[in-house]
Length: 237
Image 1: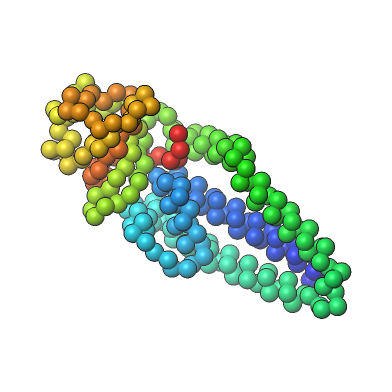
Image 2: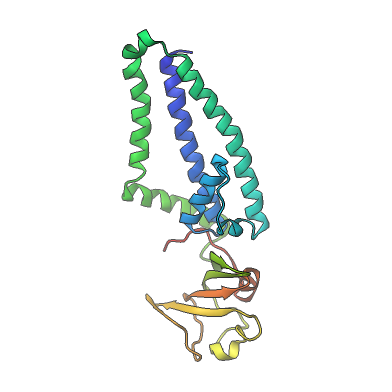
C-alpha cells in the first residue's frame, strides 16, 4: 500500500474512532448518564481495558444501558482489530530510504486530524454541536414535553437523581411536601429544590411547581414512577 494512502487511512481511522467515542458518549447521555461519567465508561468499554469503578453499577441499572454497553464492547473489539491492522500496514509500508521523502505526506493527514480535534475543543464549536445534539435528542425523546430524570450516582441500593418537573403529577399537585407521602410511603428523600435560579433544601410546606428541579435520593425506578419522569438526555442547562 502507498505510504500516503496508508498514513491517510490511519489518520482517518483515528478520527473515526474519536467520532465513535463521542457518539457512544452521546448515546449513554441519551439514556440518562452525566457526560463525564458517560465519557469515562465509553472509553473503558471501547478500549476493552477492563477498568471498572463503582460507577459501572450505573450501566447495569437498566436493560437499555446493559444492551448499549454490550454493543459498545463488541464494536470496540472489532474496530480495535481494524485500527491495529492499519497501524501495522503503515509501518510495513515504510522503507528507511523513503522516510525523508514521505514525511510531509504522513504529516498532512495527521495534521488535518489534529486540526479537527483541536477545533472540536473550542467552546463555541462545542456549544454549536451540543445544540444540534440536543435538538435531535429532544425531538426523539420529546424532551420538554414531559418530566425528566437524570441519574447522578448510586449509593448502596439507592440512587441520587435530578428530576425536572415540566408538570406536577396529579398525586403531588397542590400538596405541601409533608403531606405528599414521598418520604414516608415512597422512601424518597427530596434533598434540594432549584427554583428561579436558587437552590435550597425544601421545607415541609413546599409545594412543587412546574419548572422545579429536585435532587432526590431513593430507588431509581420508584423515583421515575412517583414523578412520572423519563430519563433525560443532557446534564447541562
